[in-house]
Image (cartoon, rainbow, N blue to C red; front, side, top):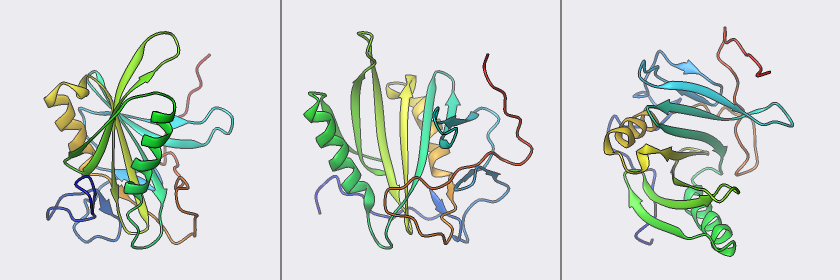
Length: 190
């Protein structure tokens, strides 16, 4: 095991959580495979894929920062995050994009300065947590890259997430289905 390896070992009463975990939080906002305890300081939105109109991620906005989360299927007992970090790193370095890998509060993480296509760049930090037959990936951008207060707030959001894997078989790395909470209002921009 290398120094950047993650494991599913977590401190007691700290998530992310599996929905079957007796210590998982309750009174959750349900987005299907991802649920969370509401936080009045943090805005929440569904990220929708243009072509399919499918919800592919949930984003949490705090001050000038964003945490985007996605839940993926994994094989039982598999630490998928280590493979994903390797694949992301190889893909980005093949595009001459520098990747910094380090150990963070959730295990292995990477920080990347991504080109936006208009001469500007955006720094993002990616980390993950392997659960029972699922992987939860978080991507932080904005001021939380350098602002400790904003970063800690979003890391707390990540630790409070509950993944509802369900029993439906999915191939590893497939995004687990997300849905809007009951009673949500969807508006389209003009």
